[in-house]
Length: 499
Ligand code: FES
Image 1 (tube, protein in one colour):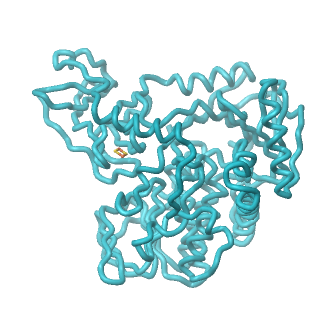
Image 2 (cartoon, helix red, strand yellow):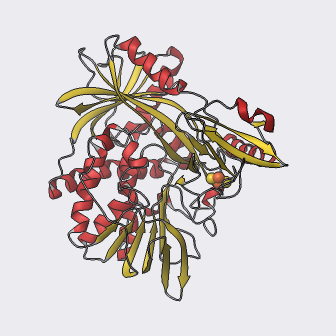
Image 3 (cartoon, protein in one colour):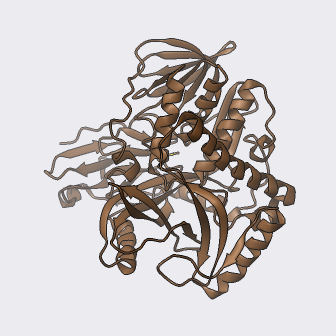
């Protein structure tokens, strides 16, 4: 199931894989919003850049977003002031507000038609006891110098108890924007699709980027792969997990709410309009969970569909898709040097579901670093920070999941149960003391893999909705044939032969 953004931009850009070895100043690994924004800013300053993307440009996390461009990241600023201080929170807010303007400027300069509209953004609650938190957030945001309003009425088709409103935020068609960035980059530089990076090795003062299509030599490398693909140094796998969320697009004859909305607490629901075939439609998001949880059916979509039918009984579901986001344990992205001992290697990750503005900030910071310019926001996203993590619950949760996944075989069944696996379903069975991941396609054909993640070996879980093997440790994913689709793993699963 492809997203509205991907379906409506099919074949709008055709890029070839790398065909021979190349040398450049900067190699950007990853063709999502962060990678393309970085490459765009560097191209504008006359730098020689090559972008390498494993699949199609903007078809992974950035192509499956809600496309909300906002500095309103849920209820966040009161927490930031309490944990990091007012100056820090003010800079975080300013950086995100500036990113909205930066995106607007790029769209104007490059004349990108990407359905960019100014919108108000709201975080709402339907619970009386959550109103106080919303009011505190309004006060916190005002203290930081931004206008924010407490409202009790919105255009949503249900009653709320209260909401915080930010004016002058925006929404767009994320993939049309990315294609616009690509076209601007391609005027001077190169982008290669279907090119998988297999290793990055420092050799003297340059990096050798090995791919399945040829090698690229570059002085600077930007790791823009959503989840960083190099384990050590950097150790990002100890600092981030992934969260999956779902979206549906519906069509209805009823009037749709203008503005962008998200609920303050669980269950999280998110709303915004979009355009499809010249008509306004509504996107409803939510139903999130940690990536790697075993998924047996389509209950996550069903939950959203139930909500849609409740609100708009006449509605028709047009699209369904899901995405995953990297969440750092302290909820602050990592932007800047990959590590203190990897000179000229940069990273941007951990955008915690608010990647439209944060990817722009990251692209600006990283391109400024490469250009040797100061960026006033670089210190607040410092990627090499070593601070005690206050979010102890998440740390405990991540460690427990990792240990559980390595030690326990949660979905083990006996070999004789192989015949009990239904067609179009998967499970792990033990054969001769070895775990084998089995998927039976709709015709009963068996695909067998070693169900251990090629990142750090965690036992994978079967996702029967997307027909993938998902890793509960850091969120890597593999298709039913074992082909790697999401990082941090970069290698495919080992194929097993069973009779
Ligand atoms: Fe790290 Fe699987 S993603 S072990």
